[in-house]
Length: 228
Image (cartoon, rainbow, N blue to C red):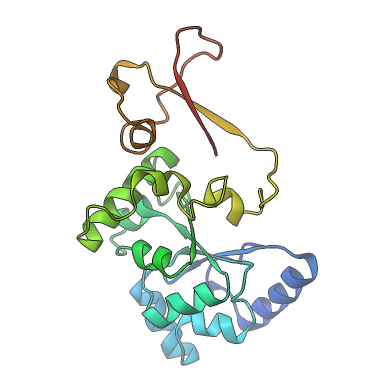
């Protein structure tokens, strides 16, 4: 279920969506707390911030995927964590429209499920998840003032390292603790721009890109594979 955002969807529609999502066990994906103006409009029209409005309508729970989630208070982060809700972090889109910096480090520290997203082509020209992974790792360090924030291994999974598959797949219900079939991305580590390589995980996050590809089965190619 993908209602666009609280400022374009009415309470009656949200209530119906909450019922359907619960009956059909479907995730609910929407843009949420992306801009300060969105929050100001919600307070003026509904008397509460968007997330609180959704909570009252029964939409804050394990099914919720909050896209962007930039402007959050500590109480709102706690609410997402307590309800098992997820966040789709879209760093390039956030930067392009100067909407701000999502509090990724605090979200992860409080146990919120965080995955990577691109937003749509009107908001992100490349739609490149390698770039989003790198941007997410670098921005987390800059915003927190901590160079150890969101290290490469965690950025590659973008979530709890206890999970065997990347957090995005788990958020989208494509994988669970028992595992599921997955698509695979193969990255060529013998390309000139990828050499030398001292740490494959760090290279995957900070050096690799979607242009780093080669023919499958090349006898002299070194590959790193990750679920996508």
